[in-house]
Length: 181
Image (cartoon, rainbow, N blue to C red; front, side):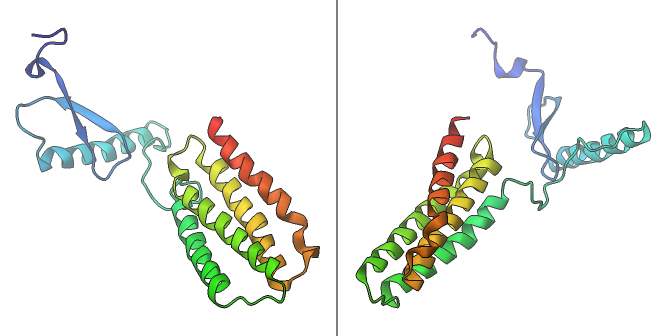
């Protein structure tokens, strides 16, 4: 017998609510696995607690449902999906259809495409960071300002549009630095 005893001596077993928030609720243990009725009772308990809080004057806001919202960190997966489609489309156009008069603009397009694709891949990981909205927002700003500016410069073959590229570069740096927070 170890310091903590055996598993049979434990008094509580976590029961996870499938439709509730990402919290676990405890119930006295039994030797068998939680049945669907105990999971349903957990869900009913969630709703019952919410009603009780409302009756007591509380808002019941502590019980959250997972739904789409602009503040949901998973929004960055949708932004990454859109950005990834754009990166692949623009990269393909740059490789097969873009024919600038000056070959240096082809390199500018390839640089924009590379930074766009790499930072889009990083954007997929934004929801698991400590500050997902800071990281995701700065990466998105960097993609738009740096890569977007480089695409514009290359497409129009005119460097007068290059003014916002350094701001986008700093946004990329700030995004990676935000992981230190």
